[in-house]
Image (tube, rainbow, N blue to C red; front, top):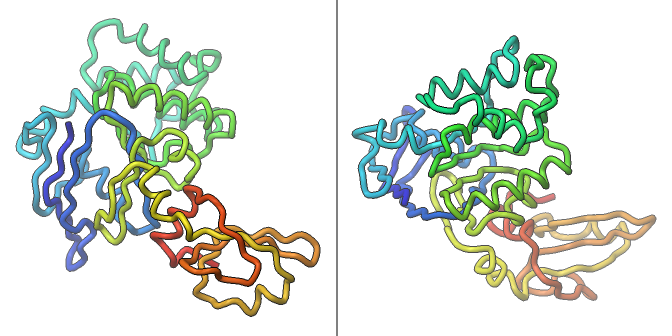
Length: 287
């Protein structure tokens, strides 16, 4: 179990993380929030890259702020901006990272297993500087798994992956969640919907919710509407109306709207989606 207890992080006079407390067991946790919410700072604190201003962090009931070594062998981390050595081959890079992590036995065999897992065996001896963005991201995912971590922290891991690669990645992470605690921060909402057991909502450094997807969808029952209107009608709608989707078809606009009451004559109630959850918590992300 990973436990965060009243974690605070200040930068000068700005409170980036504001008394965050969480208990995370095995499973996949999606971390959602707009830019500037503090997601990357929170992940960096968990991974020991950033020291909190106050609070405590426990892994299996042991305080890891006072002894970071307790967690280093148990954690895998893919940061949002992961740096590579461009003149290394993919295999050389994984071996190098494995040595830094203190892996002494069967390291090359483990590297080949992970290269196969992320679909890079053919490119194993190619230099990283020749890789596409998606290939580099897959290599980053491989390095995060080198030490078979119990805690896996992934910050925007599907950036640069094409649709097929994202599907493979989701299958991989979903399977890992049975034996590990996985924290996944992403702006690609469909990734969270496909694999997360719980969604953590972070806003202005504070945790608003940490619940399963069914909980959030239930909160939106009776609040999501769809309607088709003429183009000129859209311009007359209230500017604070939360429109989660808008599709133009000739002179007609198909709208999906989040509202506690019928927003437009003729609008019908529909089942909520995970994208609706995001906009319900962050209404500033509207038209």
